[in-house]
Image (cartoon, rainbow, N blue to C red):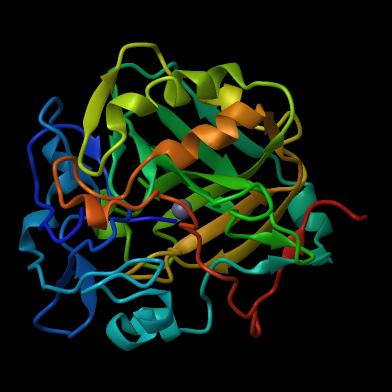
Length: 332
Ligand SMILES: [Zn+2]
């Protein structure tokens, strides 16, 4: 999953909308001076167009550090093999992603309806944060409850993880098999917390819907995003999305069959705060749409061309399940 910055720059509150974070090759992550634990400079950045202080009430209290990270080896960044050294939570026992095996059929969970309800979203923004490409929402678009969670969770942003080719790219795997791309719809707990930045580091703070993408028919909803990739080719580029976003168009037809487990952010600071729900059935997108993600670049426009690298393989390798329970709502 996600969180902050762009190659070597401090991400800060910028007034306005969800800008979120997620990753950036060399994003900076704040460090709490009292506990020593790393915290995001701003859990979910805002852009200049929107404002709602309720959601960001605590973000300015978090101080930044110079810690930078990346998925692949990159000068001056902690790559994925070094995250545990710099981000203590990454060494925890409930990390994500994991390999999704058959799991354990949970009849009780299968009987609890997962209720997902989104309004048509306007004034969204699309941003290349150097680690992923992300759509940020204004507050009150809707969200989910039910299934494995009892609180209310509101959508904040969504983003993707993908590979250099179609043979890999998803974060979760299914019996060892990769999908070429995985979508994460990130929700935060509005029943227990007053802001995303408060929820992001706390148990039960977030619920993320994981959706696999596979090659097939074009996805019309995704086209609103992929058609704009040329405007956010480089890190830090952000544009408004004029079309209304209809999240239902990114959900699989079957939202009753899923895996569920307790996990973490899949990027630094890797907080163990996420209720994961990964749908069994993928959505289809065209081969061209899958390829479009690889046209993005992880460097800023105008930076040294030698540092320009395609933004690909932004997935974390799977982690051990350890003693966690992997529940499923389907029997075979
Ligand atoms: Zn993600």
